[in-house]
Length: 394
Image (tube, rainbow, N blue to C red; front, side):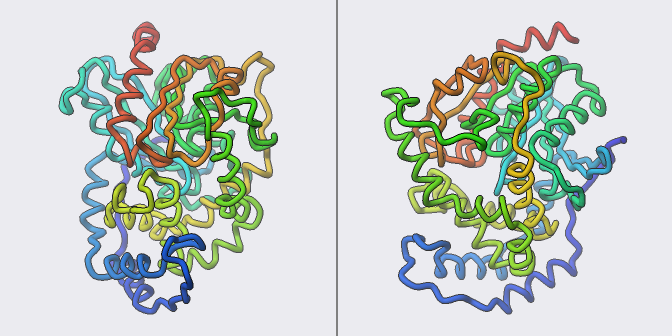
């Protein structure tokens, strides 16, 4: 179980086939959908597909991605890909960053440099991190995944093994969003002796999927609107989750076969869940959107990434200890008003050792890609008081 250096590279035959499939797209009609209310708008999708076919340069994206050191390892028979960028200086804090769906590891691209080499980006050299960015099992280059039962709890077990047993860090910090927040919270819950602290974008109690949504009385006066927004999201925007949680394989065949179908499925979420007010170009360039889509396409992982929902629903969550709180390690949360749903501070304080709670009017569900400077500042500020503990370990 030794990590092997790895480079992102697509065979030219795969790129040629992609071009043929894009040219042969059988376009569906789109009726009264200028506002995207029934799904991805056809005019936008045609424009994106044209750019994909005639202007997008995957080789340029490969070169940019490969500027970071990539590795692959088999952990208990499970292929895991990760970036491991060492921090500058002798006291860099090890930090694992975990993405969600429909993210990829590359959603953290804008934060890696400033976190590992803060002085080169106008920061304090004392805030340096060793940054580890894995792809979730069955996502991107952590593939092919041919094991069942791989959920957030299993992922957290693998992340702890990677950090402590493989990379040799006695203790480490963790941050994540979406599914990455659940993996991060599980690390703090199950491995408090190994985890210095956790920081999440949004965040929720680990057992939230087995309970009703928070009622209105749980929200503070200054959280007005969060209850209605959370209720509306699960009532009108969570169809993708219902399908991926119950019949992901049926969905996989079409999205695995059609690049335009895959783009429609993923771009809708980028537009709907980001802080863009319906103008997706406000937050993501076409190159950024297509690079994310290409990672799913080239690795053939839309099916196994969707299955992550199925496995988590099927397994549920079971505690690893009987502590009074789910997570006793220091916890920080970054709450973005434009995110898709919100658990109230009262429930987070009841379940986590909550030491930082930051609210931002800017930024949405894909915060590291949308508002990287905010995420960088939050991570630096939250973990700064915990560095003494890490240095004592050294």
